[in-house]
Image 1: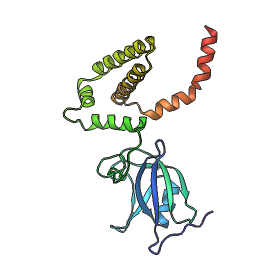
Image 2: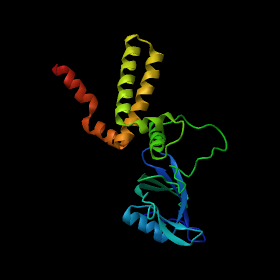
Image 3: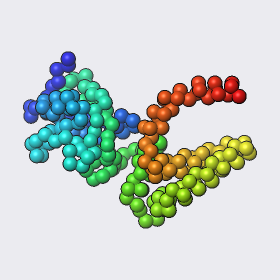
Length: 210
């Protein structure tokens, strides 16, 4: 077992990443006790340098972070934890504590990031937001938009217009995400369903049977 190198205050930094998206959620510190509790309960537990006490993420907010993996760097003095989270990582209510860009450009939005953005518009509606408007109108309106966008995808593809089809597929994906949030369906559930189906093989078999 690797011998961790705690600093002179008995602490070791730990970078916390989302297991699904690899997004960096926060930087915190552990002492020997919080490290052992994290491994024992598989719930992220840290040491607060300001309060000088242990704290378990989610203990008051309910936004627990479930440990999936824990790695140490080559010098054994820093950790990276990948977690599945029950809610926002930051005490401000954002998904990550790292939100202010100081240099460079952001990567293109991932499907997970878009899902979280849509979810945020439902939990905290914003004036003038089309997404918040859809949630306000409810399931019937959302289903109508999903149907309309599906038709637009078919029309674009029938015309063999690649750019139009990409545009309409993007619209459809967005509205499907709105539907998922409205029904409380998480992306993890869809990924798991696809994994359970082995969808490509089954589809081929279905086509051969027809």
